[in-house]
Image 1 (tube, one colour):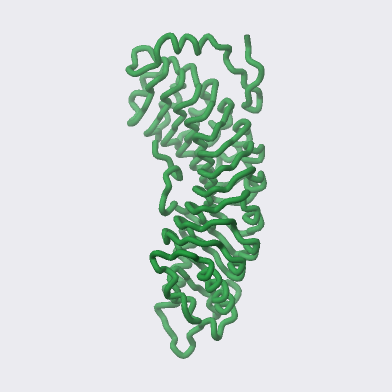
Image 2 (image 1 turned 90 degrees about the vertical axis):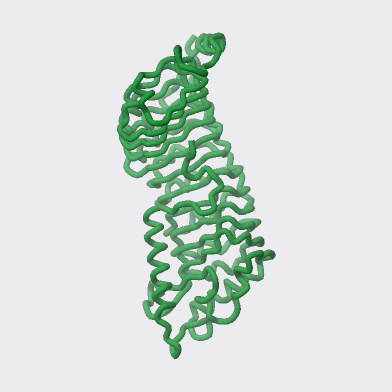
Length: 379
């Protein structure tokens, strides 16, 4: 199943709110460039905000060691609003003053590091630098970008621990740091921030899903291809009103699926594949009426497929292959795309050998405690 955020995408889809903001900034930039006033043109020579931006952008240009597409070749002179990838708009506290509101150098194949002078872009709302070859870490000056709304540094070569300065950005809503080399724990505080989208996947993070996961109001959370420990916390149910996509594939989860997952009534995509989940699918999942894609393949789930799941009105893609399910309602076979291979379902093609199913079913069933974690097995 192709899930949102799982491919090494050149341009990840921003949230709806972020997209609106981007359009506003672009419209402002077009309005500025479309109404030139030769006698009054604001540049770094006569506008202190643009002067600070000039210093920051020149420092970034010097820190770029390779620019194969010559994106920054024209970054010369005081007219910073004419620089490629730079978007200017009216300053939020002074409608008569231009300021740099957006920097977009996505897909530039740029190599280099981030200079501390980036913090001088204090009016920046959008920072899009994905699909480049930036290395090192984020600058210590990042918290000075107090208006930053979107941060996309995905698909680079950044390293070190989780960029803690992200926690100090008061207005950030969209955080995408996937496909880098960040490592170590992820601070639980990231789930307390009022984010709309959080992409942490495809790094070397190693942490336990915190109990405050459910505090996040995000519509998209992608935690795939990480090293997770612990259980899916019950608090996930508190995300019922906002969460649209939850992707935790290939993350080393070893737990049961808590009943609270079934409370996620706004969820359209749920991918928990390639983990070590055990137990049965919760009957509560029959209440996920907006669910379109469900993937629980390559786990150790067993028992029957609840008919209520296969009756979900929006479900178009249901993958539960490579588990140990014994029965599936006929209704499941009416879903547009299903994959039930390598289970223990009598009469279905491409199932596990009988002795493999018997050996699994004779194992003591897992006992899940009230937190969804494994307890001592029943013998």
